[in-house]
Image 1 (cartoon, rainbow, N blue to C red):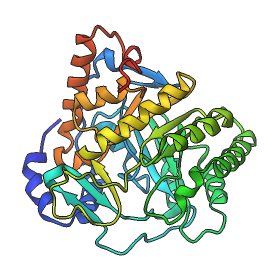
Image 2 (cartoon, rainbow, N blue to C red; image 1 turned 90 degrees about the vertical axis):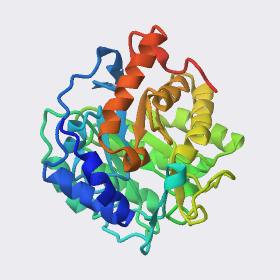
Image 3 (cartoon, rainbow, N blue to C red; image 1 turned 120 degrees about the horizontal axis):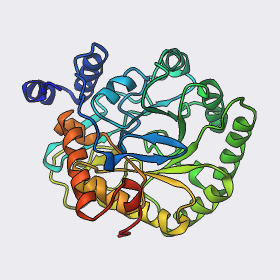
Length: 352
């Protein structure tokens, strides 16, 4: 794969972060991202959620909100791509500026607010994906103005069920007021019950359903969510979304902007929450670890804390596409150094 990122980096880092992101998507849709044809090391191959992955590294939701470039992301070497969050109706999101780089901290703050073009656009694009491709997950959101947000998730699941390999229910974005209330035990039980009813009514194989939660949870929150999820008959969880917390050691001048913080400072708190869920749930559900992954060692840390799969996003803001290959190589080396023949052998082996 031709590495053009060093040449483009000055441009991308000099313009507004959201404009840089839009330019990235246009470039990927035009095929300018290149294709990494290097075969994945067999040690990285894994199975989870009833699906096969050539490597456990994926792009998190938020990067490709409108399902424009999942196959292009596969071409960069990722084992899977998650699109969304997709809401039933298109919405603009919060006023700009709403994305801020914290360069000194290798972090990002965003308050986008589920900006996306809605189900109609996403459905057309997902329906056109090639049958032979790597795994594509679909992340579902709820419209800000909806009176019944659970109904929004039901609608999204019904409309897109034929096209995704798995579905993630995002009830943890900090940028839609009141959305995190659905993490409460009673609301969560209602949500999962209604979504399982949707799956019961769909034809064909039963598609995996995952819940995406926040890192800003106390011990009781974690236990309540775990109880509801274990009783709710879903297949996994994504841990975690962005955080509202602001670590004391943040150095960047933008540290106090409103919104969710992601990137390197999120690694430690999100990994602790991931491990807490793994301790409670054991191996009953599949966990996807996300938050602060920026090299092979942090990807490995998520796996050792209980994640079968790992996602990244903010790190690509700083490292670009070449980072994907570097993470996979370092992860493979770490697995082999510890005597693991496959990624699955390392899952949950070192809970922090």
